[in-house]
Image 1: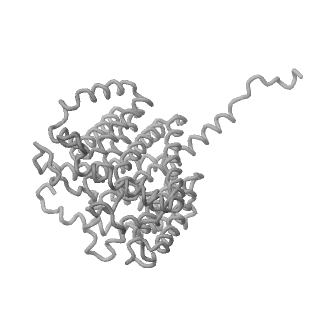
Image 2: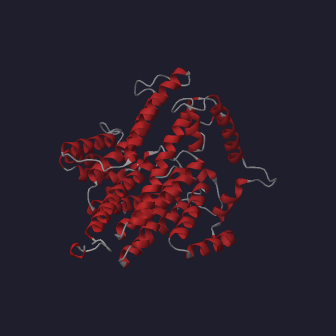
Image 3: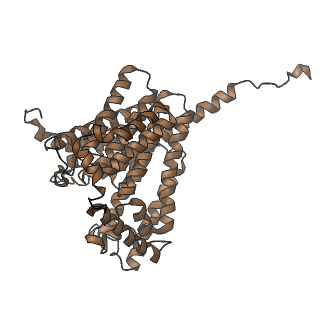
Amino acid sequence: MLGTGIGVYIPVVAYLGFWVMCLVSLGKPLYGFYYLILFLPYRTMRDHFLPYPLGAQVLTILVLCILIGAITHSKRLPAARLYFIWLFFGIYLYFSMWLGTALANAPAPLWLSDFNFVNWKDYMLIPLIFAAAGMVIEDRKAIRTVILLTALSVAFIDRSSLLDSMTRSWANFDENKRSGGPLGFGANQTAAYLTQFAMFFWGFVQFAKRFKIKLAGYALAGITIFTAMYTFSRAGYLAILVGVLVLGLLKDRKLLLLLGVFLMVWQSVVPTAVRERVTMTENSNGQLEASAQERVDLWENAKQSFYRNPLFGNGFATFQMGDHVDNLKDTHNWYVKVLVETGVIGFVFAFLLVQQMLAISYRLFRRASDPLYKGLGLGLFLCVCALIVTNFFGDRWTYLEITAPIWVLVSAAIRALSFTEAESASSSEEEPSVGAPAPYYA
């Protein structure tokens, strides 16, 4: 770090911090949750824990300690359908794995050595984090702190991703220069995270009153968009454009004009490498380039697989175990993956989760009078819109690093919405009825 040589000790300190916070969480679960937020997206930092005892499990252990601390201190979840949807979806996915076993598409999900069971276990950590957040976020101060810590974690990812990108020459686009990024899964996954939170903070600062907060929010959103640009993800670019369109429709109509101008002149203002990346969808003969054609062939293959078991699918986490185009193990479209693996029933569950995320954030944006809550609602709505777009180009949903931070904000929005509705109900009760005759006039 800054040439001092102390950077090698940061992972050790962070690892020890997890164990300290596990103990703290049993008495003060909110403090452990604050610590958790900083490390949710930073997979490459957590990978440094692997050589140490239980290094691969410290995140899960901390989440369980937070839940235990919350339950022993009689903390309760706010009223929201999302918790029940996640519960039933998780149960359905577990039995879906056994369906995959019955169809001879996967081994029985019994042990941690079974790949499908590991996938389910890791996926279910997301709703556990969501539930933990719902229990410990109980007041306005906690909501504000959660947003601040989310901003810090985004800044850490920006820094790491930018330092990695700027070590390469980008005079021209080269696929081989793209790295796994701080999330550890590839440039496209990093881009999905960055575009979602760039739009969140762009929307959040729309209602900030203090100049310093506005300046910091716009700076973070701008740096995050710049960082996303150098991930060279076309899905990320599209998600930002859709996010700006939605922000223009909901809040700032001037953005619609700027968006139109940008779409007309973008090839003359973006770096050459970005322009080459965007325009490489087709080759000089007008045919789809290799990666785009590969996805089209893969989706056609997935469609035929869906037709064989449309209602229940072929079993959760089974697609990666089959033989597909060019030995690919993912559908490169989360919605297609859900249909193929879990059928129409699983798709309905997934649709309800996304629909509720949009509904909660939009209601908060429209109903809240507190600028903090109103910004949270608008920012979260834009974030989910970006999430919807990026998942058309690959599975970004089941990655804890990408979606768990969003579910933390959803929990904050649920709590803020309950505060807003309670304030609205109390104020309406305090207002005197208009037009009612006085008793002595009768």
